Length: 343
Image (cartoon, rainbow, N blue to C red; front, side, top):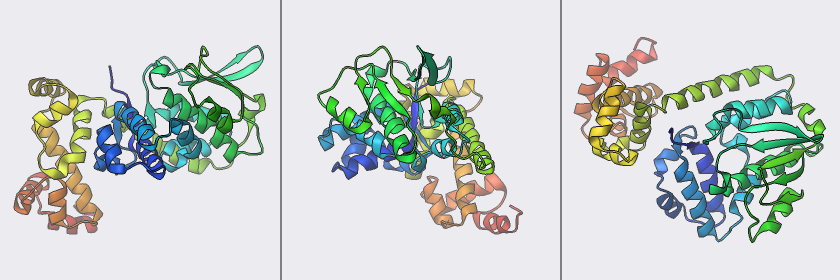
């Protein structure tokens, strides 16, 4: 089974929110098993288990059991994911929901919805409901809390002239802070229900958002499609190995034993799984260094010596030899050539 993941942007948003409530960044990252460098690119992927650990540590460190509710209410998905930008560039609310189902796993790639959309609309006795169909929701009810807060509170904030939520159901039992639900959501809440669902105003799906802004919508969806392709690639063993190497590449201490340990497998098993994909660990590491070195050199934001460090070489001369093997040129010659379009 593929490991569930979350985006670094979503994780960073939770971390920042907990810090704003008085929690310490270093302690939270340590308790969640997250390297600070892994949060540098908001499109990076992190294990879902790390996000769960971060949420629970944040609740403890802030002393706020309702933190997930409040995080969802306060956060703006546009600030940490292209998914939010795509949804807000949709023509109307129905299209926004379609795009959320299409790209939503870029934020949280949960399990249990392979047979259809995560957020499914249905009509029951003339009432319109949206259900969150993710599997085993009560294993981590904080996800329900933050997701429904974001849907209900953020929607009311962004579209105050329209009514969206009329009531909400959740499958988990009522917590001690149940009053906080109705304070934030301002709708009746049913606990220990048979589904996680929001009843909405029937007119909501026809509310227009950006009916004329199709160019921006197209640009954003192209970016979303590219990220989905990258995420699919990360489902391979090679992709998972690369994702684990990148945050520690600069240390120069990347070993097959270290990465195998992070994957919870043996050195031999990792070698065998990579061989099944036609590569060796050494080839994956070398190719990643090659790709990252080209990006750093082309960006002109760091020196050649700094690039050597960032891709794990303690000796600039060793880096230069490797770079010449990759490209046939020295790093400086390649950088000068790239400026004229002839790398």
